[in-house]
Picture 1: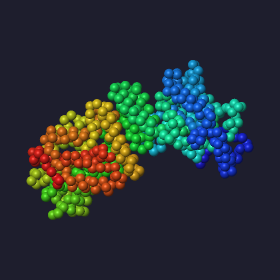
Picture 2: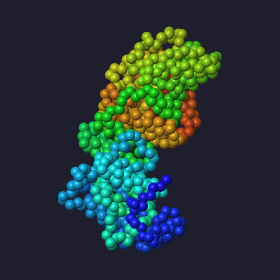
Picture 3: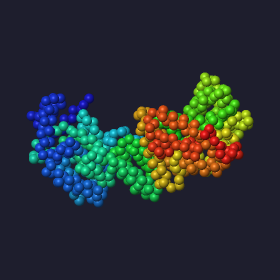
Picture 4: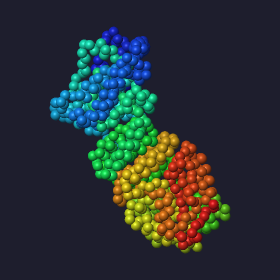
Length: 625
């Protein structure tokens, strides 16, 4: 349903009422003919396509005015109107030359310029920080948001916005507050006699799409928020749009992120605050993965600057939901489970009773595949015992027992003797070997499994060494470890930030090949939580302390473990898994000294490695190589 907004438009000439009445095809055709005639009357064709009326003879003058406008906006803080520096709105006037002249006039206010209205209230509103609420949608343009610092002017501001958004095009303005003068908000536009004939006939509104750079040689890129200005809506209610040079803004965005991180490291919070606001604006101009990554990093930086730290730990039920969506969206967890299961299956070869101790139970998604593989083993399946360890639930529900019940039903169906026990622990460092009802190795073979869990122990001094000691007491046949292939545990914040920016940019880029839907969105939230923890948190609250394979090798060998080489069989089957995965063209498996890595376009992202206590075996063991 459309609103009647004639009260917001200039009164049309009676002779042209049929063309503006809202339905006559003859009237529309007439307007089209008039428009085409005007465009042919010495107008520049390239600019006419974009909706601008500029005569070829006026091109030099327009270019000069653009340079003057850019220079004025870049130096706006020195001109006594610095309160406008963070508020930018770009309009698409059809008469570009006249509009530029009015802008230059507005950027040169009298010396008595008062940033406050007659009633003493500020006309400038606070910067829109809606980018902190989550990633924007795919459009590079989003809705104008009015902050109600002055409730007296709220109604008129809403009227202006509604009028500008009721046509067939539904194009929206970039985020930011539009600042209107008292006259613009409370009085209808007025025209002098010399210009009244120009505005009597309202032209059809034109839509200007975001530029990817094809016309960047004509128009300079929009100035950064630090050099912004405010101005009212033109009298003919031209729709507000923004012309974006996406490639150039992408470079600015990366530079702004790095500069903000450096300011945070130097504790220059005023500069960091200004930069994080600029990041929010620049991120809007990007598409796909870059926009989403920048949005999450901007949120994390803002939380660190304003000390709005995220709650930790994450609600277990929400964590499980996000984990399951991530499992469905991309092959990372599937690869982790498959490669670890393959190593465990081969280590259990010939064993009659086997016991898996899982440090990362979650929803138990890893174990149905292993149970089915054991059921098909020549000579019959072994007795399978599973001990699942997980964090406590915030609603006091026994989620680990629920998972065990489902697995018990599967075991009964496939005729595998099954025993299950769940342990709730706030940290793996709270475990003790005596709690696990371990049996002699001659009776039962043990395997320990951890997927994305050990790095969380690095936040507590001595915790990882205690877990290594407990694992050694278990005397396992194999210890399978899956960790992120990244270094987010360094002492220097800027180095950590830089590594995280590269790592998560690659991860988000890999998600872009997945089918859009709830799984993909929730997977992005799953990764966004990690980004927030890496960037915003410190001390024991920063649990996402990912380390590289080289660092884990040093830790395991120092703790008395020997590597177990994952063989060619696991490599081939993992490669087959990726071939079956939809959108898996960019993924690749790499073997690294007996460990398997999964990456995106030659950038390793996760690593599976296998270990064994050194006193249980020769220096190096091999699995079916």
